[in-house]
View 1 (cartoon, helix red, strand yellow):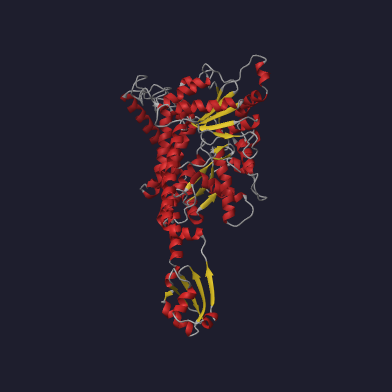
View 2 (cartoon, helix red, strand yellow; view 1 turned 90 degrees about the vertical axis):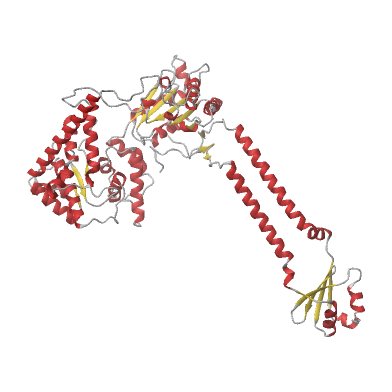
Length: 636
């Protein structure tokens, strides 16, 4: 099953695959080599044919006469002046006679009698005019023919380069025929995103029944922009709109407009909309439109910036002097914050559809679609898989299902089991198992204390997520990992949630320092994550009592020459110092909480670590039993 949420469609034109075009120099070089190879083959064959008689011994006429008199000659084949002689003992030789006289005259002159000649089979082969002239002219014709073919190839390439120059400004959009059932996608193939599909159903209804809207004076939006994280299904939603409406679909990426030559992008935009108008009603899909739709006026590239010229042409085509009532433009981006305001105004992309990450029910529906062509074992429960994959996009879920099938095939099984999907979740999240990465006894103990430090604090703190698995088996770049999954998926996160998350992140660092009086590089990622959360609390969410409810995050990419200034900093050096102080304060307070929690549960830390070193992996059920045995009540 194709990825229904993230896979970018392969380049297709008129229902078929669009093959990559080679450059003119590469084509010429390849054709030149092929021509040279053919010439060498012809030359080799010719030389082998022309020189095949070099191994046959040449004798004189007198030697031939002697052999005839000795009754050693079986047959003679006459080819012009050449005589091919076959002896009774199987030998073959040749000689040459005089051109003016016949063979009979020559032999009689040498004293051969008629009776002796009657014992020999004499065959005369008269060469045709064509073979005679071909053999005579072949050494001259073959080089001339090779030069002619080479000149023809060169002229052909020059002509092709000229034609490419004329086609340089034409659109490179892929066309999908609405009657092509193999490529057709409908809303049945798209799970989740209910609100987005509802918005797009109006577009489908307009394309099917335009009179319904026009009769009442309503105008359908000319442009729809799909906004969402990578892998959430923006491209497939656009294809589903075209598939539901049964109209031609033109697909192109924003980066395909931009070339090093000024004006080419604008020319391609004009050509794209020209094709769409001819087949109207139709849909034009521009993927990654932020490649050409970024804010203008930054001063980068000068007044003839190719990207800005392309954007200007898109704006004119969408809402210029010639309105396209039956051409709907659908665009997709994961960076709506960088788009030019003129692109988002009413009359252009005035309908904005947000494509969110799927929730638990949507994930289960997506998994069912991906499982259509996979033979599942009886123990497979997609609801459990959906519960264990919060934050997964549609693309991640496709990868999960595919990895599960690969794991089953690798073990020569005909059905995919639940255990395959559980392993696939960890592979997608963390990477494959590194079985060759064997830890020493000391490293194994350090890693075990580190991971149990995370897990134990997460189990004790009220606002932290419960633990589903603890392992010291290396995956990806991690020597071990602790899998946390929330009981209920949250859309809003409180200050207490963030503070407990930071404490959990510092649990491994604290456990190493407390047990071994030293720290390792294994805590580097934990520190990065915890520091980023603390900084966001201060600068983005207003969760600092000292600074208060002020947004102080720096707006990356907002450097405007001639606009809002050239500095990207939105606050003073004093405020920067205050931010750093608050972040440090949050981190130190979390470190103290982590240390205090581990000290209070030191017995549980040692016992669970000892068990983890023995089995290397603790699933949720066994981990919770160990908590209960050490006097800690698991979260329910």
